[in-house]
Structure formats: structure tokens, C-alpha cells
Length: 124
Image (cartoon, rainbow, N blue to C red; front, top):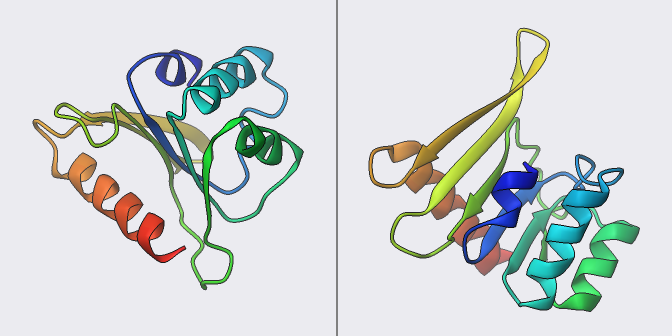
């Protein structure tokens, strides 16, 4: 995920609480840079110290905790709202954390994730 977060334009992340980045100094560095550049959008269930720090740096925050919404997957979109958006989807498969990658040019999965992100941004 470090590689994904470090590249591209705007980055949009759907996560429970960014726990994957909490103890990852390199990921935090990239997230902070994105936040300072106003290129980070977070849709999370709950906030924490890291998320608040990113918001203070300039990240856009949307909390979905008021909904009965418990996504089974988590995802990150890089180059969000640009031609050629790319998507990384993480979920548990056979008791292992798996990440699949897609782009909007050849996958309806990426298009659906971007649509979901837009709905969450408009409603949260």
C-alpha cells in the first residue's frame, strides 16, 4: 500500500480506521504529504489520532459511522476523479488478507468503488 499511496494525484481511501498505516512510518509519511497537498480523502468508520493529524494537515474526512454500514472490503483509489483511476481492494480470503488491483479502463469493479466513494462523500 505504501507504493500506491506514494504515487498518483488525489488518493481516496475507504477504511475502518486506517489501522494498516498506524505503525507504518513510511505510509504515514506519504499520507501526511498527500494531506498537506490537499490530495487525501478519507472515508472511515471512526477517527483516531492518526486520522485527526491528517485532517489537521488538510485531509478531507467523511465518517460513515452513523450508518449501519460495515464494508467487508477496504479500498484505495489513486488518481481519484481523473482519467485512469486505479483501485486496490483489500479483503480477507481463506483467512488471508488479499489485495486486488484494478483500473477504470478495464474493470467495472473500479468504477463501482469510485461511485461508492462519491456517494459516501456526498452523504457523510
